[in-house]
Length: 285
Ligand code: NDP
Image 1: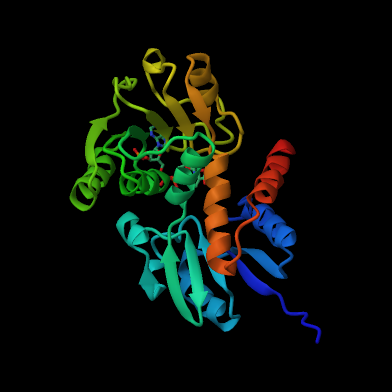
Image 2: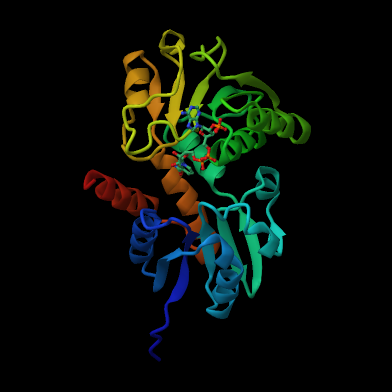
């Protein structure tokens, strides 16, 4: 018998027009032969409750959350994964027969990028995270849960940095410390990974780089950016010139989406098709 009904997922955000996730997820559905659709939905903050009611009424299989809904969605959910609870933000919701489960796949996507693309297992390692916003929190918490022994958080606003460090020290086994960011940060010896988890370098300010003493960047250090587009940020270029290995935000973006795809569909994500679709999109501007 014919079935013309597609399964629905998508993203709630505000603004959301420029969110590229639809490109990646629709490519994945095509590659996996699934009749699913990913909808990019503009939801102003005051309409989130109605949007959740709509999601349930439409029997949507799940939803991604982006600015400004990642924290605001939590009261509407029935359950959180332990990592989402620790991070205090949700970017992926799974609708299991009307019960909503919240997960945060951002940091997990970053860790998969470390393991699979950079071939680095964070267990027992030491990392510096620049920033203490949403992406930085997700990355720092997942680094700690993956067994990183030392995490230094460098942030402009002390309260946010100190709060994240407090959380890591209280709720995970990692040893965390906060460093105020007033002058160019010098990466200490013994650090394996440096992550720019700030929005510095994001379009249109693509020539901006985080304030880091470039002399402290050396061969053997892995320097990661969370910004997926431009594919090679000015910071990655400068770090590469110093002999460091570099990784962009693209693996993080692809893998966080791949984890969501598997949670929603139960099918292994066609990661290569997802990456290819985004690379093509970003190459086109
Ligand atoms: P937030 O607004 O939550 O956090 C921004 C962070 O950047 C804060 O720590 C802020 O510091 C810092 N920051 C911004 N401007 C400056 C500056 N001029 N000097 C020093 N610090 C600065 O944003 P998100 O964490 O949600 O996003 C951060 C980046 O991560 C964005 O570029 C986003 O595109 C990217 N991202 C990538 C993902 C991926 O899959 N690749 C997934 C999610 C996000 P302060 O606290 O002092 O304000």
